[in-house]
Length: 241
Image (cartoon, rainbow, N blue to C red):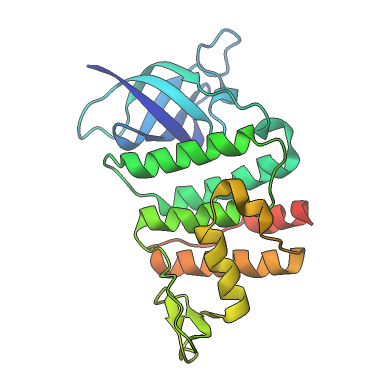
């Protein structure tokens, strides 16, 4: 049976001489793997440039339950990115977010709220005239809400430490090393709470941004099973510097 669904490209892997396996976070079926033949042919209907990280798709797919590899009948990029492929800052941010998303989204089932958040946020980012260098920080903190470990923002008087393991403010530093002081925590919570349209009002210099991204990655490591090492954030920080 054929189904229409939107999708977000997570990973594309070469398979044999002329085929690929692409993992797509679909709106209708969660994460699915699709085998696509002939993507390198000159007249291929589905081309490699349509399967780049976090490209947004309209798809018509065959779907069989309990099958590890599915097939695609039709695919088109929609919306077509207007700025991301041509802006080194935006494309570097997208590669970083793609790596984190691939390691943190495990949904084999439908999650329309999570899908809509990612799809709409990436669409909005592409439409922005200028890339905000804090977008990836705000995106990951807002994403944590959909993954089930959003930080608790309540900060009572005298609570000057934010425990990344517990996800909340504390009056005393915890016994483990995974915490932030109040200055860092206030930025952390501001990025979580501020709408994308206003994150350019949160001013971060290069050194502060590096600290916050490191804390966010620790936060994800503590709350996501088998998260592992993120390799692309150093490249991103070199670009942003």
